[in-house]
Length: 281
View 1 (cartoon, rainbow, N blue to C red):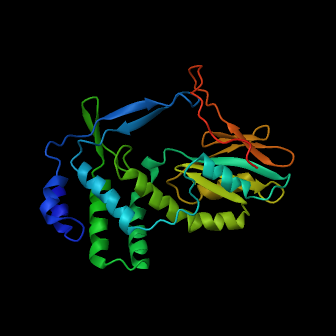
View 2 (cartoon, rainbow, N blue to C red):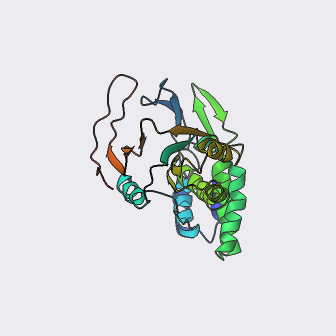
């Protein structure tokens, strides 16, 4: 199946190098669990080791193809804590400002993969990408997201929904989907609910709002109404403080300042300190 798809993708693959996209010794990707020691109850995150999967090399190639052919505006993305502090510092301060964060629960495994195909079609059409290239991108993407199986304790399972945690394409496919939402449905929510600041890092979202104007619980409801597949959870500031992207955001009487956030795990230890800029106003 992998070779057949590669052979049909004449516009996107080099004929002489097609053999390099075939995994000569494929095996069912094994799944393991990583304990989230920084979260209450120490939940386990399932991770699939995708390197030996039949479509691993093709998935890596698709990641590069998508970066080239699928433009992403990155309007709401923050790359690091320094950028986040700079962006927040541009927001005019009023005493009624409040901080809250939204988290997407188990994002990769809940991305509605069927929606990705129509999104790719729309993006390619809007950017005048050739029909042949569009068809090949969709064909390869379909293969990657349907070859979603793994082994655990000598049994093989098929993941019917979402993206595999560990596949090279999961990050960019989820990013394309979230940016599509941000430029459509989420944009409407931000406008309707009068959100002052919206910043996202992967699956973590920071919002800044005026408590006299915006009902943050209504914002949460609106986000959870976007699609049945995704579940958003809300964390509000406590004692005028909220941690986000490894920094502690602090609202004082007349400004928003920043400090190092030391993440405590649930084994009774603190993670090592990391240096970030602090007290930016």
